Image (tube, rainbow, N blue to C red):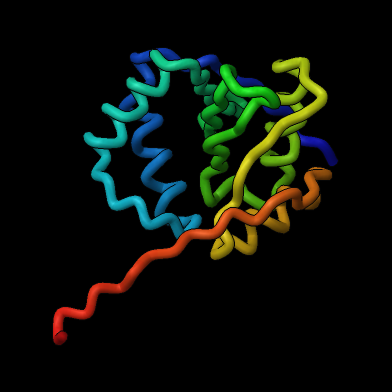
Length: 146
């Protein structure tokens, strides 16, 4: 059964809420970003003035998640996509993604998923996305005992 999802195009007045959701995204997805909510709010404000659009997803008038999309990239790049835990695995994420594609009127979307986020990867594969590239990081570990 398909869920009904609507959305609000966010503005600076939504940055505090978006920062809280971004913190939840970071914590649940295995992200190593340890920015505080106030820092994330400032960063969100910067995103909204530099080619990004934030969209808050709603179901029955309740905010259930958000996405942050880079409109200045081709193809469009989804930087963040988050559904609040208690609304997951109920069809809201898929409905939100389908609504996003319809709203953006695009045939191509790129996004990245952290390797540690197995649930997120499975979700995106269920939405029809296919792996394209693996982006690797090298981080030299500094041993303080040397």
